[in-house]
Image 1 (cartoon, rainbow, N blue to C red):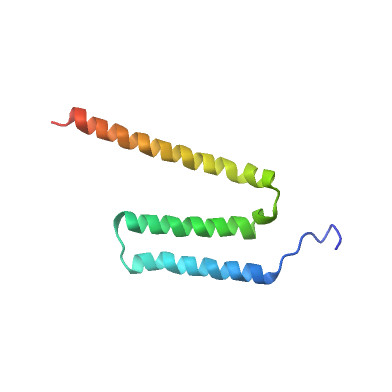
Image 2 (tube, rainbow, N blue to C red; image 1 turned 60 degrees about the horizontal axis):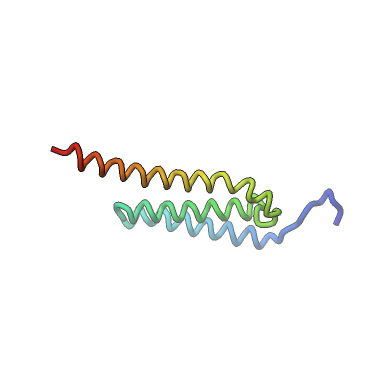
Length: 105
């Protein structure tokens, strides 16, 4: 194989992942059809969304076959942002609870 052809992956891998994406999308729609409410609804929707995004990035964007340094350079900053968002959420809950404690009449 010459350098101009690049790396070849079997079409079955792409079809298998496409099928999984279809199944996860169906599960995501089932959350609405089954009329889940509250935190369960949003947790399931976010889980299915993250699974689909992970499969798309790893297989269709070829991150699975990239060097670790390139994968970390691309995936690292969004992961750091997610950690910071989590910390801000914890702080916001603490601030809200403090205001309820001290300013409630």
